[in-house]
Length: 123
Image (tube, rainbow, N blue to C red; front, side, top):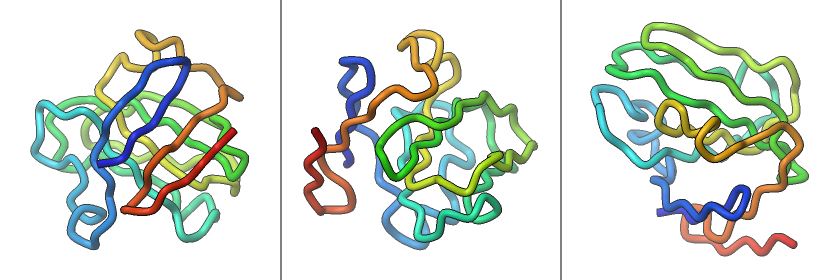
């Protein structure tokens, strides 16, 4: 699990830290806490997300190398989203309406405590 804080909301989400988790993501799931992807490359095409075989819409939160939210969107099943910039470090997939309920805005600072078994301290 990965621990992440946005706007004083602490969340525990699944880490997409294996090939299988990255490949299948949230496909076929109706209920989930979230899924965090750590991007190896910042290229916007490597940071695209699809919702093929998804059963429910999801909220996407793009986090840049400065640990700030650079882009957000809600994606319905059977769609694809390509971010506008090449600055993605992490992608957080959350249940639909999480962006609204948690008042998540562009440029908000994100605190990541644990990623893929590694500790990351952020100010």
